[in-house]
Image (cartoon, rainbow, N blue to C red; front, top):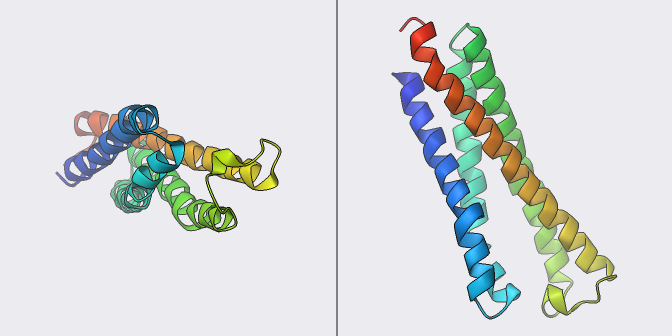
Length: 155
């Protein structure tokens, strides 16, 4: 029962992440009149998403650690990956993005392509996307292991 509850939480986080990354973000950038406005709309969502990934990851670690089986170890490992990548994105990358933005008077897109601030922003944005993608893959691993677990683990 514990694994099922945590799996539902991880699945909800995964679904929210997938919805944001596959639908909401591309639509915001396609429909809104500027990339700056799309970033302003989406920006506040990412801390919620990353903190959610951190919490779901910690619960996944606890779930896996309380089960001494190979599937439990995989679930704990997936939780560790979710926790680390969400934590790095939230507490390292997002603050770094804000520091870069603070040095830019207008839109990032208005900077020359070879401007160091624009390049730093691009690298940080790419790292943020990578962290989310890795956390989502880890969540998928957790969900598969949780789905297999009832047939293999005693209750």
